[in-house]
Length: 357
Image (cartoon, rainbow, N blue to C red; front, side, top):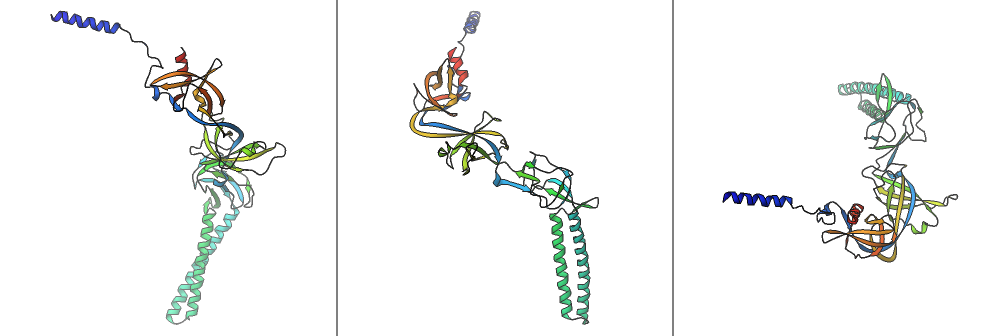
């Protein structure tokens, strides 16, 4: 009896192994919401899009320009354009006769202080012994206090202008006043500098915020208002869209090109955007008319037809649609859709190919 039962179980196992399950397709999977990203169909105002060309620039309100405080010869430059520097970091060293004079002034002031201290001690001793008047003592005390002030002043000057000596020659050390990127550099080793130079040695910006300076034709200027939200795209990061706000519209029109400058302000927390990068500014101008709208990347084009992939009851379905208008972010369409439907935005082409096979 046990033998028959064993063979029965073995037969059932072999039958179970021989029965093949149908392959699972993308349309049959119910857990792929974690793989493919979706968005919602919505009823929205139709948009027109205005695209402006421009460049990234550093935020002028958050930059520091470093000028030489002394004249002299640049012995060394310790940083380069585009490098991130910490506050207090050495940027350059200037061999300066000015600092030599400040050191001499400090030494003279120290000698005057030593002499004033001795005169005060003598005056105090004579006054206590009755050989000098109180007036003489107070005069000596006032001279000592004045000498102390002069030493403090010259010491502070030395602190500001370097105060350090190298091989017995005073040097002025240029240090970064803030942390940030070197966005402009106009100094090289061996260069002669004057404190009245009009050009800054270094320009430092933290680049946490940047500007986009874009060109707008006079025919489009009426559509642009300060405070408008815009999308910004760059050649360096073609798959990313950055958010910005129009902060200023120039009042000066270029007579030759017939364009005006528009300034866009935007956050740059990751420091990805660098000055002089090419950028396009996209303004989305809402109209009164409303249509069904989906993200543009949800639409698949195949054989002169448009499709979207809809997630319905846990399954993916292919729906033909008619695209009436599109911008860089939205497609306005009609078809067998309703507001609230979920359409695939990431992986839509892959799913379309599987559903079409």
